[in-house]
Amino acid sequence: MNNVMEIDGQKAVVTFDPEIGMFRGEFVNLNGGADFYATSVDGLKEEGHLSLKTYLEMCTENGIEPFRGFSGKFNVRIEAGLHEAAVTAARAQQKSLNEWVGEAIERATQDG
Image (cartoon, rainbow, N blue to C red; front, side):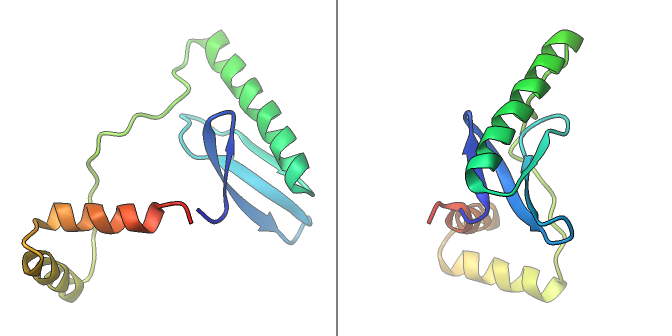
């Protein structure tokens, strides 16, 4: 995936902040914030490792679960016409709307 970096088994979204001229990484599956900054990819990896390590140590010290849980359920609000088109496309493929949306999300999130 573009703009995603894996550090110590955890995924972080990477953006560039032009105001400070640095890359910013933010871990996405944590219960709290653990972002990090650097001017290079190697620096970002190093800072990400340190940020994650510090975050996990603080969670251990405070008895906090560090990682978010995901239920597999979420609500999506879209325009009515798009909803109708999605239902039609799903039925045309003999799938439920949940199956069809799940497959679309899977395709959109595959590495590459």
